Image 1 (tube, rainbow, N blue to C red):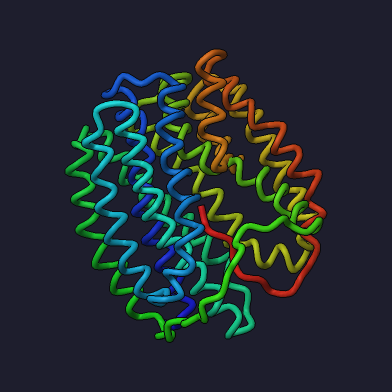
Image 2 (cartoon, rainbow, N blue to C red; image 1 turned 90 degrees about the horizontal axis):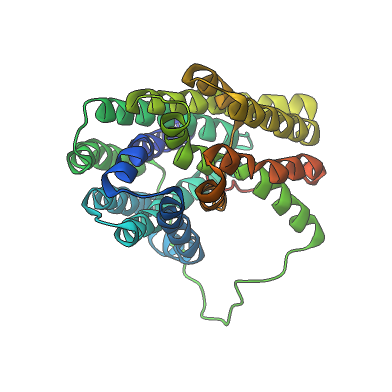
Length: 349
C-alpha cells in the first residue's frame, strides 16, 4: 500500500478501537447508579486528559517519531480501555477516562502529523479522506460495541478482546509507514501558550462551535436513545453508527466539495445542516427518527459536561438543546474558512 493508504488504515483502526466504548456508556452509568450531572463530571476525565496530553504529546512525538508514538499509543490506549470496567463510583470513572484521554491523544496527534507530512510531500489533499476512514472505522467499532452491549458482555472482557485485535494491527500499520528521523531541538526558553491572532480567533470560534457536536453525540447519544426514546442497548449503538456513517459520507466527499464550492460556503451549509439535525433530534419521539437525525454532527470537548449539567435539572432533551447557540455561532463564523495554503490537519474526533 502507498503511505497515504497506510495512514488511512491507521485512522480506521484507531476509530474502530475507540468506538467500542461509546455504546457501553449507558451500561456503566446504570451499573454505577450515576445521574446526568455525575456522568457529566466523569466524562470530563477524557476531555481533560486529552487537553493535558495535547500540550506535551507533540514534543514526545518529535523525539520518538510518529511511527513509534502510534505503536506506544495503541498499546497504552488499549490498556486504558480496561479501566472503566473496574470503576466503582464517579471519581474512579473520571480517573479511568482521564487516562483514556491521555493515551488516545498520543495516537490521534501522531497519525495527524503523519497524514499532514504525507499530504505535504505528495501535494494532494488527503486529510478529509483520512477522517472519512476514521468515521468508517468508528462505524465498525460502534457496531461491535452494540453487539457486546446486546450480549451484555462484561466491559473488562470486551477491552481484552479489542486489545488483542487492535494492538498488533495498529502496530503493523504504524511500522509500514515511511521512517522519519527523530527531531532534536536546541534547548531554548519557550512560551507554548500565546494569544491568537484575529484570523485564528475567528477560525477557532468556528471550530469550537462545529466540534461541539461529535463528542456530545458520542458521549450522550446512546444515553439519550435509551433514557428519552426507550431504545435498547444494542439499538443505541446502532444509532451512533448511523451518525458515523453520515460523518464518513461528508468527510470522504469533503475534499472534492471544498474544491467545487469553496470552504466558506461548504462550512456554512454543513453548520446549518447540523442545526437542523439537532432540532430534529430534539423533536424525535422514537429511536428510528433519532437515528436518522444522526446527520447532525453534534460534538466537542465542552459539550458532554454542558449537556449533563443542564440535563440534571431540566432533562436530557434540554441538555442537548444547550449546544444549539454555539452551533449557530459556528455558521456565522464560517467566513474564517477562506482558502489558505495546505495546512496541517487538526486532531480527529
